[in-house]
Structures are given as C-alpha cells and as structure tokens.
Length: 402
Ligand code: TRP
Ligand code: SF4
Image (cartoon, rainbow, N blue to C red; front, side):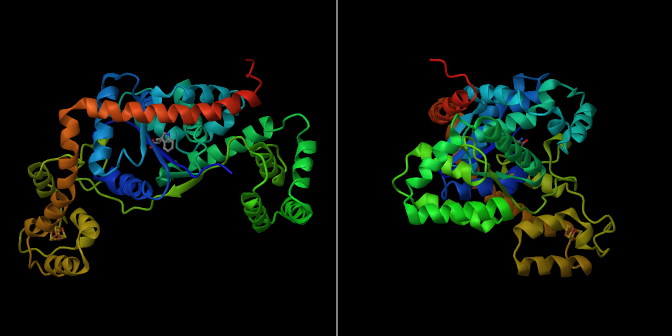
C-alpha cells in the first residue's frame, strides 16, 4: 500500500566504534542495496540527554556522518539527513502528544533505568522531553511511513510503542465522514468475484482473528489495478475494522550481533572509555588491544589459561576462523602461546577491517562542504517525503484550512 522503506537513526554523542559497526552499520550497509533507506542523525534525541553540553552535538553530527560514509554507507544509495533540519518531525511529535497516554510513556521499560544511569554522569533526565523521547522516535518512523526499522534489542520496545501509536492514530483519525459507505462502494469496484472473496476474508479475520486471511486479502488488494489510492487505503483499513490507514505500522528488523567487549572487558561503550573507534590509527588499535586484560589466572607466561575467562577470546570469535580459534584454545590452555602472541591476529584483523574506512573518510574529514552537500540533498528529500505524510495527517486532524 505504501512504498517499501527502511528507516533508522543514531544519536550524535561521539565517534562511532566497533560496537556501532557490528551492531548496526554492517546491517545498514547490507540494507541499502536491498531497499530504499533513510538514515538520520538524531540530534534532537541527543539533546534530550545532553542539553547541558550542546556544543558537542554539532561536531558529533558531522563525525557521525563521516563515520557512516567511512564504514560504507553510500550517500548515492541511501538518504542521509539530520533530524532537526526536517521540522516536520517536531510537528508530528506535537500532534501525536495530544493523544499519547502518559502511562504508555511511563511504562517504556528503559525509562527509569536511563534516568538513573544518566544521573551518575550529572545529567538530570527527569524532564518532559526525555519522557517523550520514545514518542519522538515513533514520529521519526511514522512520518516516513517506514515499514522496516533496523534496531538493536534495546529499541524493540520503542518500535512496539510506535505500532500502538500508529494504530491509535488510525483509529482516532482514519474515520472520515461516510467511511463505511465509501468502503462498501469501493468493494463493488473490485468486481463481483473479488468483492465476494474480500468480504469472506474480512469476515474470517474480524470474527476469527485469522491472520492468514488478512494477509491473503492484502495480497488481493495489492494486485487490483483499477482502484484509486484513496479507495485502496480505505479497503486496507476496512479489512481490520478501522478506518483509513494513514500511518502504517512498522516492523522492527532486529539486528542480532555478537556482543563486542570493550578494551577493559566490559561492554564496549563510549561512556566507559573502552572503545576501538572506526577511525583509530593502526597504532592506537594495537596499543588498545595490547593493554586489554586477559584471563587473570595467566600471571606468568608459563601459567595456562582459559579463553572462556578472557575478553580477547570474544574478539577472536568475531575476527578469527575455526583454525585460528583452535590455535588459541590449545595454545592458551597449554601455555603454548603468550597473550601478546594471541592478540596479534586480532590486532591485524581489526586494522585490516578499519583501514578502508579511514581511507574513505579522509576526503570528508578534509572538506566539510562535502558532508554539508550530502546532508543538504538528503534533508531536502526527507522533507519532501515527510511533508507528504504531514499533509494527510493535518487533513485527518482537522488542520487543513487552506
Ligand atoms: N533511539 C535510538 C537510539 O538511541 C535512535 C533513534 C531515534 C532511532 N529515532 C529513531 C532509531 C528511529 C530507529 C528509528 O539508538
Ligand atoms: Fe586470553 Fe589469548 Fe591470553 Fe588465553 S592466550 S588468556 S585467550 S589472550
């Protein structure tokens, strides 16, 4: 009914690191060849938590885009933009705030954790804006009518909220005057055979909750040639009992990734200062890995160790093939290899992985206008798409007095 579209965003809160690459960017790079993709820098989201340090937001917005391009996001394939340059995000957030129950936001599972976590760094997040940030995220997605949203596990609850808000929106505002009559008239236009099938499938879904019938009916509508856009949307909406689908529900594309450890053995995270950044030099990479802790039982070179107790081993699981991993396990348990020896192939693999990224990023680091031009194009395209949705939203909400 609406075009296929992928959307995802990232907060500009620092240089991107291996965790971002394996946890998100690798997937984005694959998706950009398979679907139309919109990727944006979520600068307003960053301000919900970093409003006390706005000076870093602008710098990191550029850095984030340079890191994306370095990693292999191709601005000729994907639309790259900055949230705050598409003010329609704010308008939709506001309009949706009128019907978003407070309790839906308060029960977002990460809310209280995040407030506590940021308090440790002196950031007071007991604000209106921070409570509303999952609503803003829903608006980010719905305004592009994106059907696929690649996210990590921590964001799945936000996508679920987005789906609920879309449903609520369509329920409240998708009922134009005379909707049922118009839908019934549209059914007649299908021709008697298809009309009968549509009615049967609709009944099976509404009375028995038969999801397969819903799917079949959607396929039927997708194939029909002689319907206007409006009638098609009505019939999609009528299937589920509601009105027109103005904002379609997105699916999350869960990115399953190996959990990358940081250089201190904990989760790789900027706030823990244990990251290997995508634009680190080979020397920096080497130094960071060499300093990584290993199995604490290996005090001397001659002490045997256990890879399961060693953070370096988790890097071998990402970067080494079967033969190399066997070399590690045997060498570690028999004290046949030393830890520095064991780390070297990991260093080499990371250096090898990141070298082309630094190379691709270099011209953009040297000339910020290259980045500005890419973003100017992307923001314009994003604004056009967002404005299209907003016209329908304003219409449905009684704001189309022109
Ligand atoms: N909240 C996301 C994060 O912290 C970033 C984000 C903002 C996002 N808006 C989005 C991700 C829309 C996907 C879709 O990582
Ligand atoms: Fe870790 Fe390798 Fe040292 Fe074993 S040999 S403790 S796996 S670094």
